[in-house]
Image: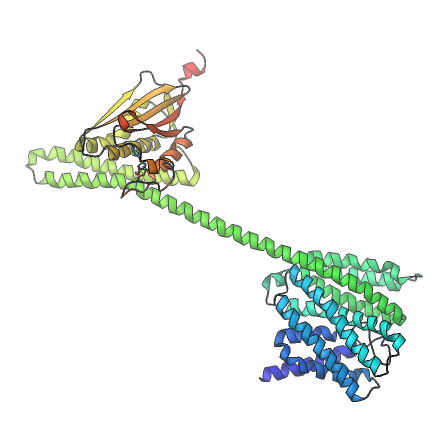
Length: 529
Ligand code: ADP
């Protein structure tokens, strides 16, 4: 409550001081000045504390009329004019409160602000001048010149003061950042002073001719510092203009004309400043979105890599656990069976090493797509990939065969990755065959153009129609325990080698998965010998 009383008292004092400072070139007897900033303060006060504080406006206007302006009219007329002003500005504040944002940082805020204050101040001017015309203080033929004078004075007072206070009072860090003190600001202030000096200081016949010079520093400031800089520059220019007008002893009519030019300058500066500020805010928003997007993409990639690793590790780990179970059984057998135990333990070690290699290679692959290429003969390469699955195929009664065409060229490939590819394709084929009937899986390699084509065919259930369209997409699976990553990884590994992977229907209802690898022709052929 005390805060509110202090705010009202502060407002009253500030209003009267502001009215006193701006009390220049009054047209007597009703003391209309060509620059009237107090209504700008009143609007901000009502926007901040609410329109129910309108009686403070009435009091402030009355005090100013009595203390500063000394209008020679009976108190009821002064009260009537103050009441009219308070009513008009309270109405204007109510409209502004619902139409503009509290941060006052958008072009639409500024457009609505100007669209409301121009007619709003005209209504106030009409009410004020009409009351004193009725009172007989303003002669009827002076009605329109006084109306124009009052309107211009109030409109420009509001245009200069209200945006300044709204923008600088708002808790908007983006706006603050646009106005860090810089040496450039001294140069900008100097440019404003230089323009004022050129307009008023140098002896020309016509001061109006050079008014446009003031646009240059204002444009510079608005472009660099947005709406914050523009509002400060506009206040500076307005004060400089008033001082210069006083100092050069201009006629009152000329002062009004200068104020009209000032209104044009103010509107330009405000729009330019606001355009720069809102553009910067948009750019910042865009940058934030971009970094959020990058973060999301990184998270997705990390998630995919984790799933891929889990999938790839699952196979050696399940092999290790079956071998170890076999070892436990063997330990119960007589000692002469133990060489078999040693052999099985070797397989455990080999599978563990394979798991380690998978981790390393996949990490390398995701980090940089790095391949450890070497020249490899097809037959041992394919055997190496199928080897870990021979046992499982046997156990499930599946015949696993390999046929490599004679004189196949070598390929330039990463052994570990091609073994992983083959492992994935053959274990999918085993899954497809199932244990129930006599399954057959055939791996064949032939030369084809400048490449080697490898196909893994099975006589299993065939590709389920609901999965066929997105077979190679991550997480597409028809298996209850499946992760749907094997084929996606397999395809990316083959494509990294410059090859292709595809699926086709196999003979006898099964499936066939084929991939190509670019052939590495022997140097003899490459040199044409
Ligand atoms: P997962 O094996 O974890 O399901 P994959 O990406 O390796 O993931 O396979 C995706 C799907 O493709 C499998 O769930 C299966 O439906 C289908 N698929 C893969 N290979 C074969 C095949 N040889 N025969 C029939 N369907 C297959």
